[in-house]
Amino acid sequence: LTRRHSKNRQKPIKARAKSTAVKMFGKFTEGLSTEYVIREVLLGITICFAQIPESVAFAFMANIKPPIALHAAWIVGFICSAFGGRPGMVNGATGAFAAIVGTFIPPAGTGNNGEGVELLFPSVMLAGLLMVLVSVTKLSRFITLLPSPVMLGFCNGLAIVIGLSQLHPFEDHETHHWKEGPEMMWMLII
Image 1: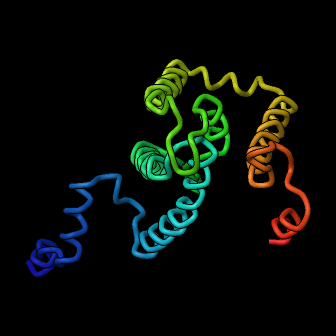
Image 2: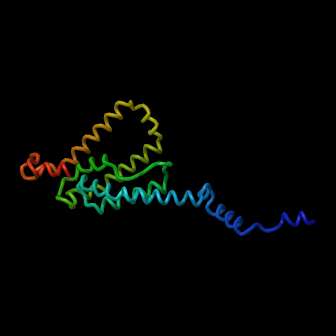
Image 3: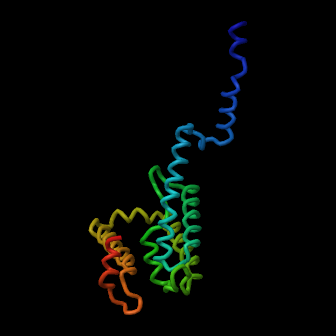
């Protein structure tokens, strides 16, 4: 009788709370510990601080206002973290996208939107739709057929485009020639 009675005792409060959380959130709470949550929050804050200057720099490269790029950065981060991802994966603005966008939005001066910025949102939505279509039809498996030299060539070409887009401060805006003399020297030193 004593043994049977001891089995039917209620679980401690901590165990009841844990089982309730598992019932409510199921697999989402598996493997969560205080250390894990703290580490993930600190990693998110670190990535956030890296994303702000990157987004602003890419905004100037893409000829759009920095607030648009900042909003795009947090929306991309939220969507990618809510709908998928992998450990160690960082999502955010890319130089490749900024270089492409900069080709169809002409410059309108520092900190201003170029003409045609209203086409940016539909083009990004279409690109996202194409990515979903590729995923649903399982066409992504064909990327393995792409040879390594093609991938390296694409990355190197992209690096050249991004690098050239960073040289505009060294160009005289009136004459469209490279700056010379002490001004160029101080720019290189700084």
